[in-house]
Image (cartoon, rainbow over all chains, first blue to last red; front, top):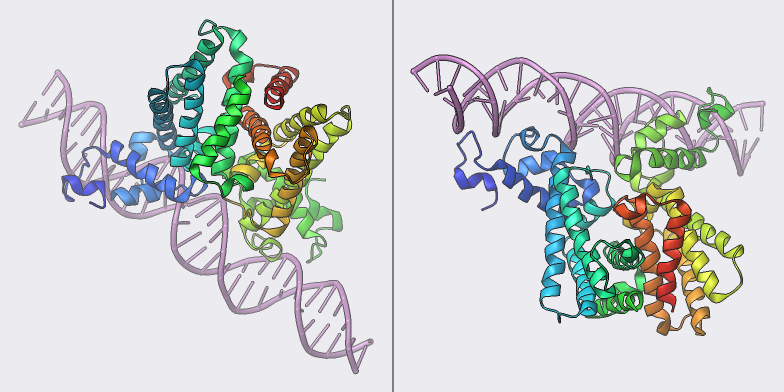
Length: 204
Length: 204
DNA sequence: GATAAATGTGGACAGTGTCCAGATGACGGA
DNA sequence: TCCGTCATCTGGACACTGTCCACATTTATC
């Protein structure tokens, strides 16, 4: 139960699904140590495998972190869609729900969030990563376009897109960075209310 | 001219002002390698001093980085005040200028900005650092209070403070993280205009 | 069943942060 | 002027890191 290596029995030379196990362990290490303390050898040790085994699946540290970031973007989008699904089907409410989902994800996986948006230890142009990021972005632009009655790719939506994205991102980043003192002491509901207020200002 | 050690001649056992030299070199290393690539030994080498010399002045790596972050917050505030000084003395214009100064700083020292706001390699509660951060925050709350006609410490200003801070921070962070594709290709003036638009929405 | 490819091992190397004992020199009191 | 104290700085040590390499083992393919 401790290590993924135990699933197939400890004596098999080949792991079976090392790639997946490394991703699971990698995310755990990331959450425990943060981006800056992340160590590839620690991930290998946790899986019960040689320190250089990960190289065959991810190349180097950046490779594993990039794969984690790509997976993060997919869950990031899922978190927003989950909030949108339980919100009224109104353009404005959908945008507010999206912002709350943004905060959900950042608070549930702060280290991953920072890896995705503010780290030099990934390759943002990795196809898998770039595509996952674009999908999340598309959800935002679609929402704004719908709210403003524009075509999904109308560049006229850019100012609103940027404003929404900035306020949600800034709020989430400041909260998980513990750099917004007056908000630290608030309950989750109060933080959410503040975020909704801020986004609402942008949408009006 | 290359190293601060040369100022007093290379042969003196004691450096003279090693602390200041380490801060200068530290910021250079930070700018070149980013937070995650920062190395204390590299800073020592650049100054021309033993690898363990910095310990006597800053304790460990976090100590030096915390000192750099504190200095960063002071320059952060100065950047905002500089923009405010050349803007009309109108509450609204002052807030917009403050946001532009926010972006100025982030773009001029992205690695330092990320160290200050999103890193685990500093101690946010260091007195010097906490005080420098509070001073910058106070400038923001004062601006919002003035705009809304409130007393400087009226908690009723919180929603607006949070909204302004979030939008400026999110915009700056996304720009320097190169995670906002549609904005990457724009000129500095265009980015600034987008930021002012976004902040203006919040202020209305 | 033999051969090629994929997967995993363990040693090597350079680089890192931090601890430690000791060398050096600045500074104040006699 | 001399002497002792103390801050400063050196260099070695240790454990840890990422990455490279030769090699072992297993799987896949013909």
